[in-house]
Length: 175
Image (tube, rainbow, N blue to C red; front, side, top):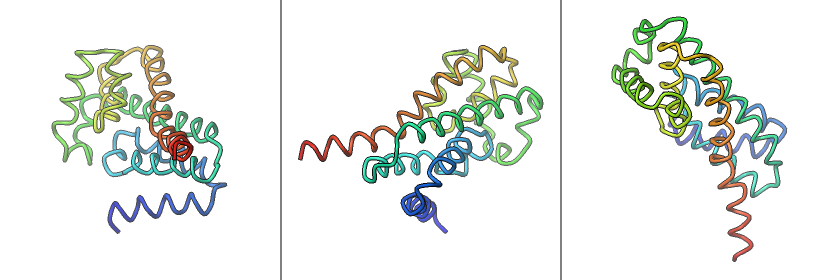
């Protein structure tokens, strides 16, 4: 099964089973933010597609936003915890062992930007899950980490869901 098939199948599942939209969005956001899983999961593309379902079908936006935010917060928190516990040994585990530049890139980004790096790291592809891991490795204080984590997760969730949810409605009104 190709990535395109996974994306289409997941979006179609949410379309047909709207009651499952909240848990599906939570799991996708969690996986997208988790250090190991995010490298394998096309969650952002699926979440943007779910955003279009919101605009198209009338699924409520705020419960999905809350699910995406909570999943992203928990995924980053778990990544931070893994980094805090395993330190540099984390790079020896698959799939990070196959991506040897990811942790050093995340470390440079984190060391340069600190809390702002944790916040903005969520918005940059592979750094999304590497920066929280590195923040844990570097022993960033948990409260400082969580402030950036929660704030960026709330904004990121709007960024992936709102364009489809509200953009489609706006486009239809203009036409």
